[in-house]
Image (cartoon, rainbow, N blue to C red):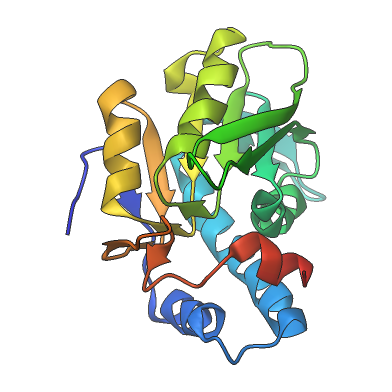
Length: 211
């Protein structure tokens, strides 16, 4: 098992229960999609513990008191298609968050990512949360981070959220961005000859979309 200082494992028995449903090849596409959406809430609730908050005064119906507010604007960026499966929890918890999209597909001959869409809101010192459920080779996530950094975002204002990781993918990211925070629920054994995570859960995008 390979671990990284900036790798944050999100663990609970309930998350493992949901992962079991997602991993099972007998799980139907509708149940897979529902479970992925449910898991996105569990992941988001843990990831958002790591964002910064400021103390702020408020008035309750009875008196003035103090609470917390998010200290900087947040942008949620799924890597299409599979990243859409992690969006729901984040946008429900952060309804005012801005959205971006990065479209990448994997060339089946070279296993390299091919960009077909890149859209971000105007850069204003936001925190960017990139959603990529399967960190396999790490090439797609690395390309997404490269594109965002080239747009002017500091690596300290980036988080990468994944459902499953392979050690190979973690190493790919660490080599160029050792200070990037990576969140995942599991670091699996590795990759097969087709560069899929094993034991993994198959093609997350296909199963989520039912294709």
